[in-house]
Image 1: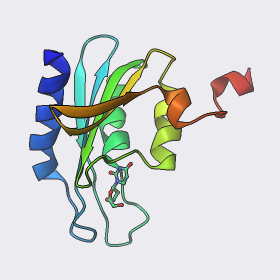
Image 2 (image 1 turned 120 degrees about the vertical axis):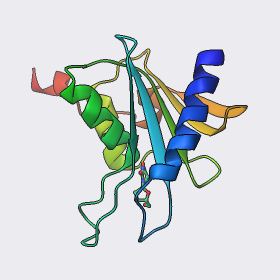
Image 3 (image 1 turned 90 degrees about the vertical axis):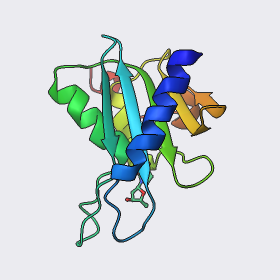
Image 4 (image 1 turned 90 degrees about the horizontal axis):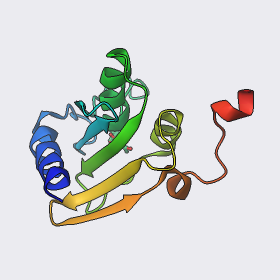
Length: 131
Ligand code: THU
């Protein structure tokens, strides 16, 4: 699918902007919301370590701040062959994902794997629990 390949290429290029002076492990994410708009993010590390922001949450913070609420597709590309989202990011994605949301772990534009949030975060806690 051309659009997915284009988004993967964008994340690979964006990874150059990752701020990773401590781990030197770069991650980029591109999120397409159900509105069709695309937001991008990179990981942003910090000398105090724990304030480090992952690429997925960086991309989603922009989307949510723009008033978006529903993820259509999120693409993740990092410096390992297939970089999976950390536990915190899985929970963060969960908040704005539904069963149709595509979570794409991309090695490159020709090699990627697609998951649902239930596959990556089974038996999750979510806003439905608070209803
Ligand atoms: N990282 C992400 O950006 N996303 C993840 O889901 C996994 C980890 C970043 C955080 C840190 O800057 C670096 O990768 C090494 O952990």
